[in-house]
Image (cartoon, rainbow, N blue to C red; front, side, top):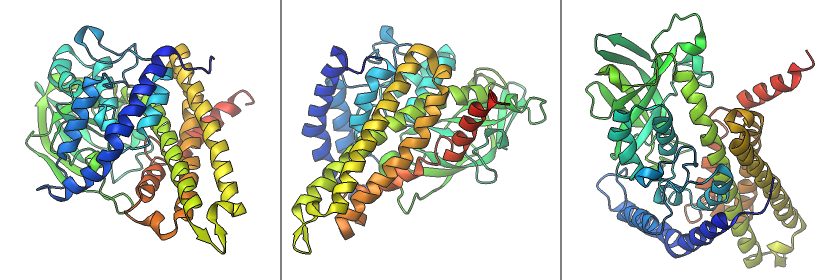
Length: 410
C-alpha cells in the first residue's frame, strides 16, 4: 500500500479544505440562527441549499460514489476509489452537521443510493436514484425495531406480504434517521416476506415505500442523548399499517434483504469511521486552543501535565486510526468488501470508542463550556457515542472477529 495521496486526491483535498474554510465553518452559526426562524425545526435552513449549490459548482458532489458504482454517463459521481475518498470524508467530519449534506455525501442517503445503484431496476433508478443523486430529495432506511434486538437482523418482525400485484407492509420501526425531514420522500424498508423459511437469512426482503403512501405514519422524533438532530433530519418512529405498494417496488429478489443489508453496511461503516477521524481532529484543535487560552492555579492549562498527556495520546490515537481506516479502504478497493471484512469490523470497533474518549477529554478541558451549546463538543460526543450502536453495536463486531480468529484453532 502506498501511503501517499495521489494527485487527484491532493487536488480535491485542497479544494475541499478551502470550501470548508470559506463556506462551511462560517455557515454553522448562520444555520443555527436560521433554524430558529423556521416554521418547523425539521425544515432545511436556506444556507444549506446555498452550500449544496456551491459544492456542486466546485465539483465537490457525490464524492462517496466509488468508481465501480459511479455513473459517469449520467454525469454523477467523481469516480473515486475508497482510498481516495477517505481523506475527503475525514475533512467533512470536522463539521458533520453541514459538510456531508452540502456535498450530497450524508447518511443514510449514501447507502440508499448505493443500494439502488447495485440492486435497483431501471425504473427504480429513474424514479428515486436520479433525484437523490441530484440532491433534490432525501431518503431513509427503515430497519431497526423497538420490539426486538435489531442488532440481530434475523429478529426483524415487520411483515411484507404478497397480495396479488402488490405487497402489504405491517410493522413498527424506530430510530429511522432522516425521516423527520420533509424532503425525505422514499423509505427503503426491511421486513420479512418468508417468516417461516428454513434459512433465517433468506426470510427478509427490502422494498421501496414512498412517504405519501396511505398507512405510513411518521409518529414521533426520537431523541439521541437529548438531541433531536435536526440537521440530520431527525430519527423517527414509524408505523406501517396495511401499507400497500406495487410488487415492482421490491429491491432485488424476495429473500435478498439480508445480503443487500450487508452490502450496504460495509461502505457505510467505513464512511462513518472516516468522518469520525475528522471529528477527533476538530476536538484536538479545540482542546489545544482552549488549553493555551485559559489559566488555572497560576499557569496555562496547556502547561498542566495531565492535559499535555491527553493531547499527546489523542494525536497518537488519531494517527493509528487513520492508518487502519486507509488500509481498510485500500483493501476494499483491491480485495472487495468481503476481502476487507475483518478490517471493516476492526475500524468499526476501534474508531468510535477512541474518538468518544478524545471528545471526552476535549470536553473536560473546556469545563462547563464543553457541555454547553456554545461549543460543538457535546453534540459531537453524542454522535460519536451513538455510532457504537449504529450499523451494529461493538459487541456484534467483536463476536464476529473473535469467531473468525478462533476458527482455525477449532
